[in-house]
Length: 147
Image 1 (cartoon, helix red, strand yellow):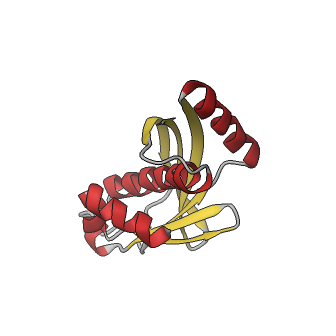
Image 2 (cartoon, one colour):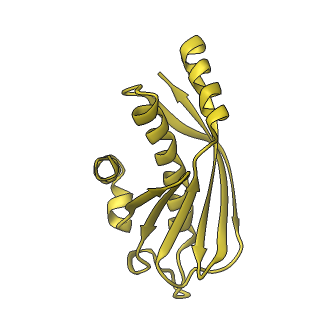
């Protein structure tokens, strides 16, 4: 399931392939993704803000995708970020490592109800880029889902 998602991203969003984005694992209620610093570096020898933003945005999108397509079993859905907020707290000097929190079960049930009754709903997803146990980037996005 995770490799299938990674392949989908690389095929449909070529930037993720260039960034060498990896879907690492799901652990408890978190999705972990990563990308090496090499293709994502800037002139200051730190991670490029555009790469950081892309990683948190697509990681959160991936969490939505896994909920909607794998857990709720809807196929061929439209998922898009409609609002987001990103805070860059510290430079990233090593590999980009992102932790994305899945919404709680109550939020997922609310989404399921909206999808069944209205054909669309939304989820709020949070991601962080962590380096040496320090939060370097905080992200929160609202994703709309249409079936």
